[in-house]
Amino acid sequence: MALIEVTGLKKSFGTNEVLKQISFSMNKNEVVAIIGPSGSGKSTLLRSLVNLEQIDGGSVQIDNDFLVKDGVYAKPAEIKEVTSKMGMVFQHFNLFPHLTVKQNLEMAPSLRKTESASEIEKRSKDLLQKVGLSEKANAYPSNLSGGQKQRVAIARALMLNPDILLFDEPTSALDPELTGEVLKVMKDLAEESMTMIVVTHEMGFAREVADRVVFMDGGEIIESNNPSEFFSNPQHDRTKLFLQKNLK
Amino acid sequence: MVEYWNSIIWPMLEGAQMTVLLFFIAIIISIPLGFLLTLAVKSSFKPLSWLAQTYIIVMRGTPLLLQLLLICFGLPMLPIVGEYLVFDRFVAACIGFILNYAAYFAEIFRGGLLAIDKGQYEAAQVLGLSKLQTTTRVILPQMFRVALPAVSNESITLIKDTALLYAVAVPELLHFAQTAVNRDFTIVPYFIAGVIYLIMTLILSLFFKWLERRYKFE
Image 1 (cartoon, rainbow over the protein chains, first blue to last red):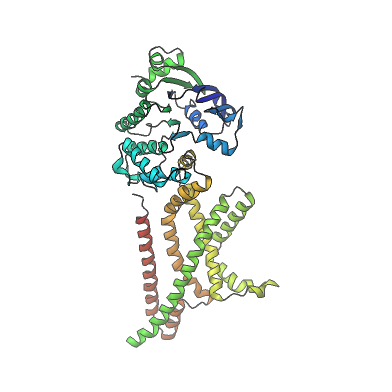
Image 2 (image 1 turned 45 degrees about the vertical axis):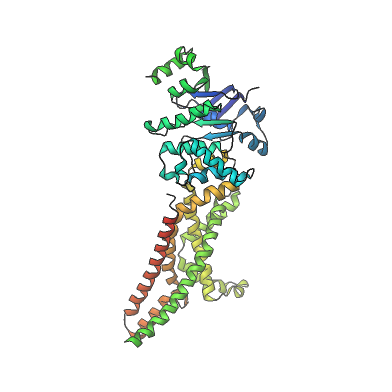
């Protein structure tokens, strides 16, 4: 059974239909890259999975639990339970500016009260080391570079031990020379078999790291394939056109 | 000379005590009240929101002096209930300042809320924080930080506005200065009063500068 199962997902902003009957599924340990022109609905799809967007129809099932079944949302407690299996990394990091790096990592788990303070502290220390920012534990986000902020954001999402990590254009707000350090962390996660969906414009990352590339345009999934097939032998004209423009 | 000096400075310092007392009472009550008003304005229960908005429009849109006169002299003139609305002048003044300043603080805090990026709410939601946790742990600390310079400004205005007590005959700093001016036909007391106000506002702005540095988050 798939870890994420989306069927017939519909979403409109006013009269603008941004997602038209999307169906999509992915398995545990899979890394899926979603690419496509801006306005194609890829971020909206991602945000729908964690209930940051309210969808108008269809079903979303995470790990066999319904977030939405045939357009009807689960009860609030169930929604919270389902979405807690996913962590999210945003384009603009969304770190809490009034908290230090360490506090950013530890706030959510300590409010959950499922672990002791010392366990939480140990894990935040380990995760900061993993993203290479141990020495920044007591710094405030305003004193970090974009790349560092995004690495903190990834560590913060990992603090809740998610089954799935969602990335919404994680490098789009970064200076080109800073994207590498973030992509490196994501690559490491992929190698540790983290299940990830990455909305991205980084064709190199999609090609090298993803198990599958999904191309969206105009609110539809146009094509979905393994990276080598996808990039060397695109099936649809719209995919070909997009790749021509975006691959130098 | 020293004797004359003493004869005007001590009453004025006593008056300044009244000023400081009013300042603290007004600020300590109107800031939380202003915050409650902000919440009322933001409330999804529309009648409450309209009521709060109307309150703010009225309190900000009419002179504080008019409000003070109304509370001190107007309310007791009301038929039937009037006799129960005769307050001590100082108490009446405190009520006037609190009600008026709460409206200003409400607007300042609303501005602070508007300055918070929606990404902060989204990050909190995805991290599994409840609405209450999001408000107390994420939104309010940032709102107060953003509002700090405006709160500082408003507090300095409050110190100076206490001079309005003169009009309702509460013996504060300006009252004693004016008494001395009338009695001795000299303008020196005005300058002394000015210096005392200046010292108070200076201390206050230094305090807020310190707060801003303390909560710089850098």
